[in-house]
Image 1 (cartoon, rainbow, N blue to C red):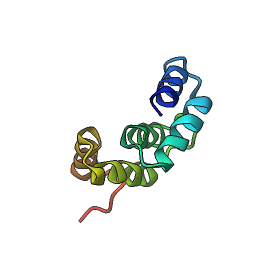
Image 2: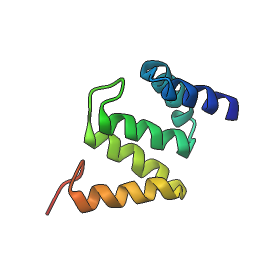
Image 3: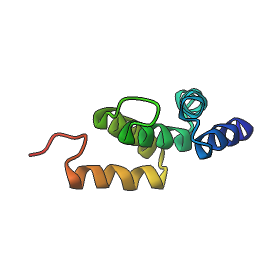
Image 4: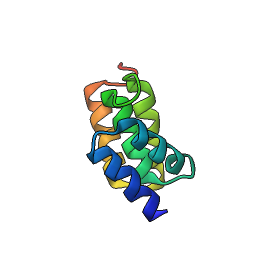
Length: 88
């Protein structure tokens, strides 16, 4: 799994977002919180996919529920900013 993450990360660093999204997406679906967080970021910024703050929030939330601190931070930021979440 680490090799797959590193391969996807290398593609991302090389701005091959389609390849990165595919690699991270497979890992995210298996429950890897690091990959879920990257997928969330890619949805947030529209890298290889159309920007979608709602989907970004959902992926951050999945990783946060596992206890992944960077995702927990981003969930908090999105709540604070009212980005990708309902405001009241």
